[in-house]
Length: 342
Image 1 (cartoon, rainbow, N blue to C red):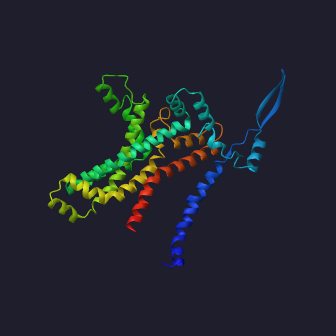
Image 2: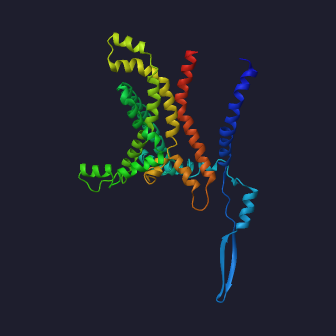
């Protein structure tokens, strides 16, 4: 294809990527280099019948003029990335110097806000992603084997978790695991423990969030795998049956290799989606037991006095870096497959 023709096809996509992806990411990275202005205080004196009192307050006019002159805030360079709310280099050095063993170092680092959120985010991504792929594949195989007249209703009910919005879905499950809910009350009856609560334990809260993540995302994997199953070559499957292959062997040696590109696609989508986990934490009111990188961004933007745009931007850039690192093995594998076939 001539270069001119290629450019004519590609420039609309390039323009859209620059406008809607590159420029926003660059602006977030630029904002992460700045922090909020220090407040300019003004002292006023109020006099009355019993004397005068001095009051200190924020000079609104001076602050407005400062924000107009420097809308991004004060330049802080990479200081936001290394402060105690993010990578916490100084705090980690102090922990390493003052701790007696590796376990103490690990526990103290895991209590730092950024690393606490990072651990939950990585655990959620690593646990939920493979379970979503596995459960979606199993549901697709089961639905594909049931009679045609039942497929419509079964597919509809299988898609319900994906149809429900994430926040509503998490609220429904939150009420179910409450001590007065169906699951919470049932567990109390089974274990004969009226004080048993899924919300009181950090571990049980994490497990509940993982279960919700699998429940909500499995329909997506199911839809993709079910569509892929309709394209599996029947001749190959029939040949395997003639050769005496069992159902499990046909799935293992014919269906799974054929659907592997779809599994890679689902893995990519789920890795990106799960690394940005946020809605379940809000829906389950689980911030005391589990926080994610996205939740840190939300907290910075809802800071009591003024939004911490620089801190939120730095966390956003670190989240993007984390997603890229997670995707590297999958993209590298795809690149090798592409070169091998070429």
